[in-house]
View 1: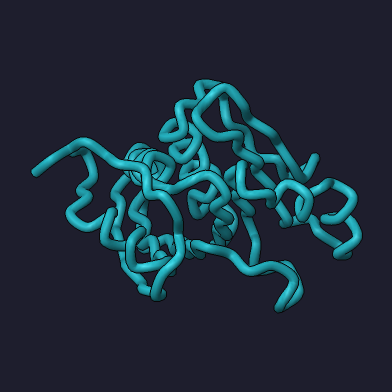
View 2 (view 1 turned 180 degrees about the vertical axis):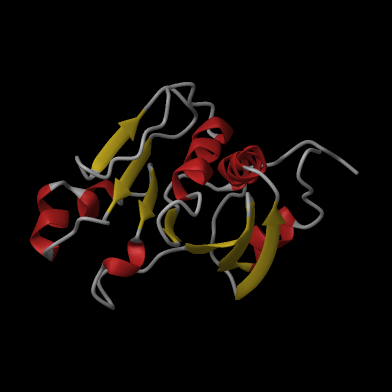
Length: 169
């Protein structure tokens, strides 16, 4: 199997879904790293799941896949963190504390969606329906201990690029 990861040119195409199980926080980070390595600039992602599900761990991996070495922190209290220094700027939003849509506009989330940045939104499901169309939606569910079931809804090219991914390889 070829371990070289090729970044997709775009995330358009027919929708598909996939499911991956990780057995540790490191596995979730590794999956995120793979995603960060294949997703093109301009991709918008919604990451959903309960408290402690591993949303920020997945974002840490995405940052690594983009070549960003900065420590990724959960922006729960400040709503947004911006990371540069990799192939693509990463804007990491956390809408857990979102009280009104105007807050999202004030922190510039809609302005950041410009085709050059990667936008990752934890708790994207808190946005009112129809507010933003995400290219990739990821739902993380705790299935026991450190094990997570990660459901991915994305264009089939993204799902195909993840095919054969295994934790630790």
